[in-house]
Image (spheres, rainbow, N blue to C red):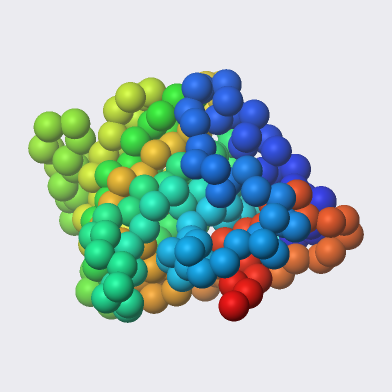
Length: 227
């Protein structure tokens, strides 16, 4: 992705967040030069990859396949000094855009429609070999438990949620004509480096072509703290 595209994604998501009345923590508003002044008191942000995250899944067409998201809080399964056992994210999916089919090896998560259009999540069970099982999928949604055939698109209107369990394949799309969606995620600790299993081979963090200065730093771009 070009840096100008990343910057535009972030600005667009900031607008959508403001439109729905969600307030972000201070570190989400820091300019790149401010990061140079942040010492070790902010290591939790660096170590647990809090903040902005833009991905095109290595497809090179963010408007069709991609996500813009912010990790608001997160623990760390690999560092015992961080005690949180949970994570929270805020994500944006534009109408006409989708996110790649994947499951998590260990993480369970609630996906919540925080506002906007109708979110569609297609769900499958893992067949044990990384494929898609042709078996009914258990859906846990806002206190209701039921089953759907493999590949069913579970629709979430604003305020509705669904629980995604480990080894449940899922993707994300928007119901045509309903508009962009602001998505919440409340989950166990998040580790994008080891816990994602994509159905197709894709990338996670984009290679960025620097065609303009960054508007915000992404969560994998922070400079080390100065001693």
